[in-house]
Image 1 (cartoon, rainbow, N blue to C red):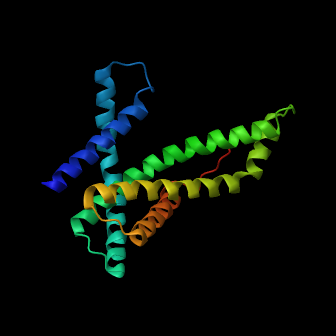
Image 2: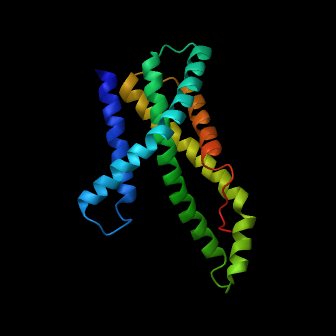
Length: 186
């Protein structure tokens, strides 16, 4: 029963996040927005299943290597939460990085009148630093969320396990989200 409730909570959180992200897309009725959110969930199910399954296998391997006493269904739920953490972490890291980097660059180049080409070259010169900070933020966000999930669902916090699965989640973020992306639009 516990796992069914956790899966329902995960589905509700996913629906809410998709609903919030699509809420401002079009000026349509609430009914249309709910339909769009359900369609988003149906389209996301294969992605969530695939990435969640990969995370489950990797997390189960970590459990076996560390000898942590966590039931395999708990590891499965944590793997599914990992997919949600990828989307939430990506969303928040983009917001934080864009606000901080634009603030720093605007203070640094405030007095200068720059052309669009000069602005792109400035962003390109800082792209590696921005990517590195987004990876660090993703690791910290996943570390925080995994700690909360472990405390609420399993009542056991193993720092080594949480650190390793957060690192795996960050590597998944790099692999699935940020491998070929660029900060500057072509």
